[in-house]
Image 1 (cartoon, rainbow over the protein chains, first blue to last red):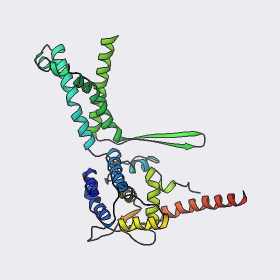
Image 2 (tube, rainbow over the protein chains, first blue to last red; image 1 turned 135 degrees about the horizontal axis):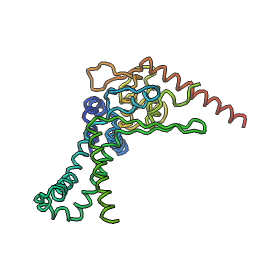
Image 3 (tube, chains in turn purple, blue; image 1 turned 30 degrees about the vertical axis):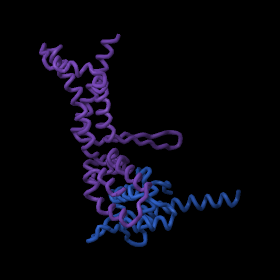
Image 4 (cartoon, rainbow over the protein chains, first blue to last red; image 1 turned 120 degrees about the horizontal axis):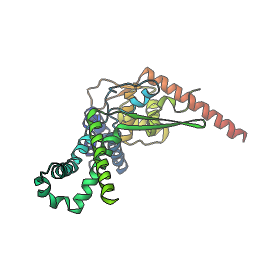
Amino acid sequence: MRWASLLRLYPRRWRDRYEDEMSAVLEEGAPSLRDGLDLLRGAIETRLFAASTDEPRHALRGDMVGEVLDHPVPSRSSVVAAALLLLLPATFLLSVTLKYGLGHDSLFDSLEGVWTFRPIEYATVLSPLAALTLSAAPALRATFERDGRSVKGALVVRAEALRIVVAAVSAGMLLLFFVYFLTENF
Amino acid sequence: MARLTEPLEGMRRHSEPALLVLVSLADKPRHGYSILADIERLSGTRLGPGTLYGAIARLEQRGFIEPLESSDRRKPYRLTEPGERALRTQLAAMKAVVGEGLRRIATA
């Protein structure tokens, strides 16, 4: 296998900066399976925790600066994927609102077979949870430090407006489904 | 005295590879493959390319190393002044721990 092809898994900005160099390193050595797995882990880590080459857009005060430098703004791909995941539950909620709130039943009824198909039903409920995780997790960084007998903690959040909106909409949908579940079952 | 991990704090699993990269660049600029080979020679540790560039990116971000102009794809990196200070601090802290450890073993 050509391990260099794994470099395509890295975010675009990372590749613009480091792909040539990393390809040269792979060509000079004799990359093993271990190197391939290392590249895979590096790509996942870079995407999840956004170890991008961006300069930090904001600087916070004092001790937080180090954390911010180590936690640049995440790339957009995960929040775009999260937004796409919301299309299914958004369509469901829209059709339910139109039917039971405004009396327009055509959308809900035309999709009734879809909503009662069990896998779609599960996907509709679980999509906002997945979207919340995808949009919020890369923007958060929790740090803990033991200082004698006490433990100091900090939560650093670095997110663009789009990420915050998608996370908020996902959380709102989850809340709606939870309230619906409670009112239907208790 | 500086805490053992203070200069590279926040790098988590990248702190050890980052230290090895700083040590490798301490005497002269090196490019990626040369850093890997040098680290393997001096420590017996064989870093993967993903780990190496994870460390390089973080060190560059902190201004501890910088790339040199090159017409080649193999871009060399050199230690900056803040990088040299961080390395000195880190090594001094490690030296104190090593010295104390050896003293305790000798007197045990």
